[in-house]
Amino acid sequence: MKEKLVVVAVVIAHQGKEDLLRDGLMELVSIARTEPGFIQYDLHVSLERPGEFLFYEIWDDEQSLDLHNNTESMKAFGAKAGQWIQSVTLNKYRHIS
Image 1 (spheres, rainbow, N blue to C red):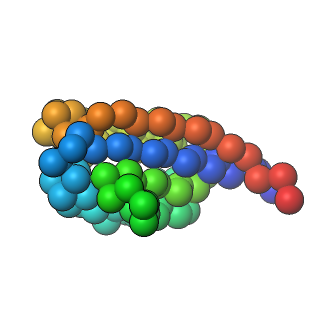
Image 2: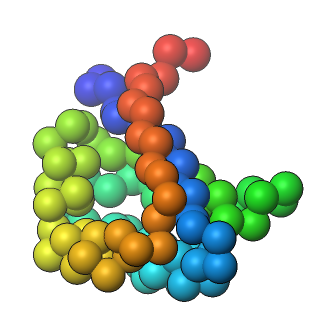
């Protein structure tokens, strides 16, 4: 069985831009869930830091993630949301147990 790619992305909003970023990220969820190679794409918000968002994603493979990251939807999101985002951290994992 081919191993799936697990991605954990943390996106932190600039102060005062939390609601705009949350709404924009929520739009991405419904789009990502229709993309080739999608398995799971869940968005979470920190209980302690309301401007911190976490994506837990599972993709078929690296190619599926690359396709997702280069869709017109992701490019459009980046163009409008860049001013709302303080930082993004993306980590990739493989399931071992």
